[in-house]
Image (cartoon, rainbow, N blue to C red; front, top):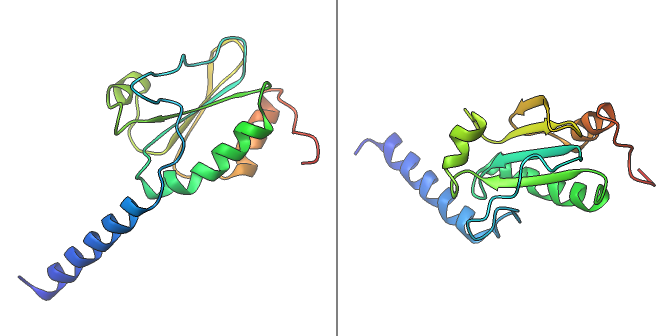
Length: 136
């Protein structure tokens, strides 16, 4: 085995072991139950990713923070598409993470592929008429 391939294999093995030891992001689609998307009469952000995907794991704390800050004003849903691969076709996913935003009427208004920071998510919520939480 060439040296490069050997070291690549070792790197991937270490990465997989380290990912397995980090707690998974809290998701909404637990025990095979997929929530209703979009949430009726509420601005909804759907985050499609995987609990073991690195950019998705980077977004997990942001998603959890936003869920608390926007509780009752906007719906934020996470679906692990590695666990629920039927959702890939349902939502037309080509890469993860993908965020889909719906207005209050359930119409898709914006889609973003890749890591999305908190500031950008908040900007979309404001564009859809959801005000910032107090103290932000």
